[in-house]
Image 1 (cartoon, one colour):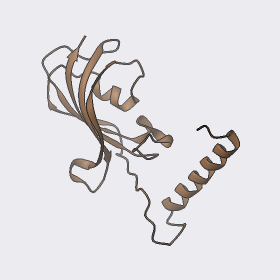
Image 2: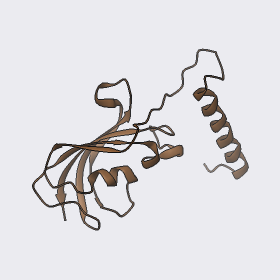
Image 3: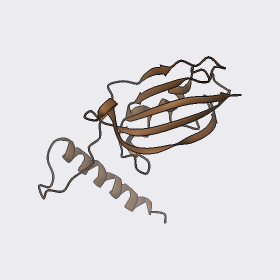
Image 4: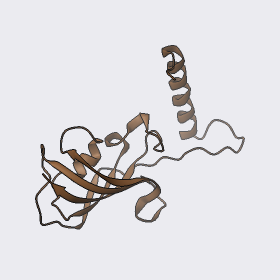
Length: 148
């Protein structure tokens, strides 16, 4: 179902207002809970295993296995709610994945494993996506399994 532009604009404005009120502690006191979003201070990539195979560079096709979590300041290793896991291939630097994920894979070598902390500005930003709320930071464990 497509929303009419005028309704969509009203919905966006209402969402922004609600987000602003929740951020400053205002809004309803009815006891309802809202999604708390957190962000790492900056992008970071930490190798847990350094690979020895081919390097993922712009224009090459990388095959990865990954698990993604919402970033949490209170969870172990900042891994809050898991939202996805799987494997796929994509062209490095081809903008088919979020910028932070691409940045995290770039420079890895096959066999490598890396944990990447992604601020929302390099993730899904203000729009969010599915189970990922707007303005949420992300954590990915990534393993590079092939480069072509």
